[in-house]
Image 1 (cartoon, chains in turn orange, purple):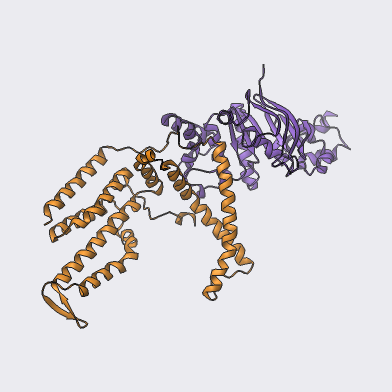
Image 2 (image 1 turned 135 degrees about the vertical axis):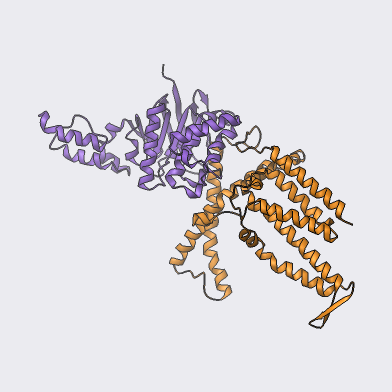
Length: 265
Length: 278
């Protein structure tokens, strides 16, 4: 069971995208999310599609995993397309579908919007596919570092995130243990009306919360005993480093951006 | 001159004013290089002693000195620099997401340079035989392995004193044996100052001295060999001697022992040489 507990959807592979500094990845993806909205003609969309697909290919993640990540949003993409197809009334009437007239402008609009949607999801999922949660945490801590000036608890936030990540598997194992213990005493989690099934969760949650609080208390004591006194004067084992690879990636991304603004009308 | 590493001077402690004393006028000292076991059943105050030693709690009466410093809210961080502690629950003291990160935690807190950190992590994990698990997550380790990582985390900060607060209590027999082996090896290699707190008499065999606690008071201060002779008295305060000691104590009616055997091997040696000595 333990091996299936990979948090998020990180897929380990030896690719250049995996090796990129998480900060580089977060910044590029963040920018991409914004510039996607600047594409407004076929060339600019093609340009972004080429970029996204080559980025996806560079990760060496199997297309199967990529599609799995997109699974929950397929419906939304198709729905957006159909909505635009029937609602937009621009250009010439091409044909009638189910009694509705379909305009040429609608076809283009529907296609563009759902493509934009697809590219957004694809590129953002590349981040979680190629970056471990702890790397993302580290990146967030360093990227948010300037916020320290306005007393935003950056270090504490990052520590909370990493402790949560560390305890997810532990608490999941515990949930399983408690649910088995309660099932053996006759609590039925799987059958019966919805109301009863919701009530059955209570004997699961109460012991889980009690033990989680006890854990938190003991962990805090252990951390104190190990000399933890906040973020001041702390050094870090995991160090993020921007190397040549990252500069090349940022350079290429700038080319994509400049290209996009050249191609759009 | 041997320095007294830890001194408890008439220490009394209770959790709240309206509650009974957990510790009553406890005085003892622990010398440098010494391994002292603190023994007692549940509620005897033995874990409170551990928490007092590195300032997780402060005494209501009396004073505690660790490495020449009195433990007070002002000195507590300097004391913790020198005292490493391993707790009972293997899961609730594992802070890092991987073995390497967890060992680093104490070093990061002390602001130690990254390059030194990497060396120390490697060395300390090697001495607890966990260096092959550098990037393992805690849920892929057994309880005994997690406790070994906890010991490595303590070793990495190079403390003057290591406290094991019932570090084996939640482990299976195999994990327990494993931890005791690790601790014994450590003692042999480094002569580190050790305080182990336990209710299991099997675990005091390697100690230089034993302090037996009962109802918040020191009941007896002796060496393991002497303690094993007191089977009856120990049973009255809720402690059980190991099988070896039981056998020896029964055999005493019919044969003489040179000395109280501590381990099964010592007992066997005395038994098979018994006849030839007569």
